[in-house]
Length: 386
Ligand SMILES: Cc1ncc(COP(=O)(O)O)c(C=O)c1O
Image 1 (cartoon, rainbow, N blue to C red):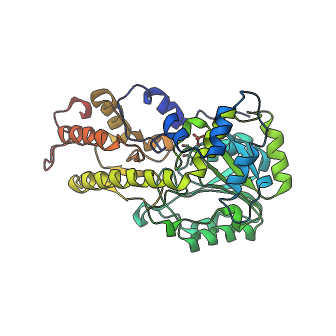
Image 2: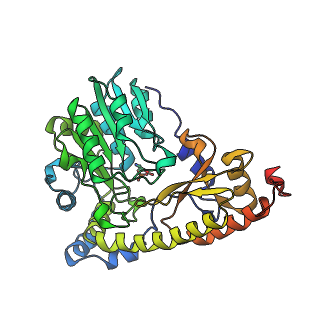
Image 3: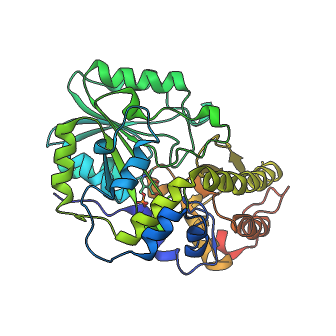
């Protein structure tokens, strides 16, 4: 098996810890350890104080799996296996897929959602959204791509990088399309709980379909990406057993401190998500203002959920060149759509962090220098864009 380099991660590795302004991060403002411990109930506080740094139970801490199961309608603790989120994708794909299998994946996508299947030797069909209809993934397109032999459909809602969220009816229809051919459904729900309007929250796929796997975790809505805690909810016992066997070759078990911190986080999930939604609302207002002011070169479809979206940048030279110059000249990191293999006309905005608006203001000033409003002779004197 030969995995392609992970383009987004490689791009982040160049800039993430060096540049002052990060405008593409997908997580929400991380909690500090003291903020987290201050939210602990007496049971969690006692667990934290008595914590031993030994190996932990491979499927995950029982109390944590029970808490997670409570987030679903049909899931019990035995249907939950704790994984690092990225690891969950790797394990589930390996458990479900073999060489020659047909897979349909929403695309563009977080790369492991298609690269792992490609590395296994699958034939991967890309189900692409329509920007003109608000980044909608049309179910009719999926129906055209699905085959009687399709083994797996891969979904991610709310979607990274477009921010698209299907309606409940569309989501149910997608599940139907998969179930009609008996395909597995891998549903990446990492950005769930970040719906601006809670009534738009979709059911978890695992609650709708017995051959569905739901992935979620602490990294996005719950502000603990560094805890490296996520989980798969799987109701099929054979698949669950296979995932557990494979996990012995990756992490074996989670870090004990992370499990207690994740339990504290989940017991306070509504408060954490509410705090993040307030940050997101402020940041979205700033993006909308910039996009309206620079409608000559920017086009923004404001996502109804999640913490990322794709901004169209209509400039000569393309988005990648712009991002390179922006990083060097203004210390601002933006992720170009080329890292998603999705053309060179967009950048991903990640608007879950507190300092986002400050960085956006730097980007806005830089843009005005490089591409002054109302001039036809763009690009301007800014050396970067010549
Ligand atoms: C859609 C999606 N799935 C999975 C992951 C993996 O999460 P983690 O980096 O916490 O392992 C990410 C991370 O950005 C993501 O965007």
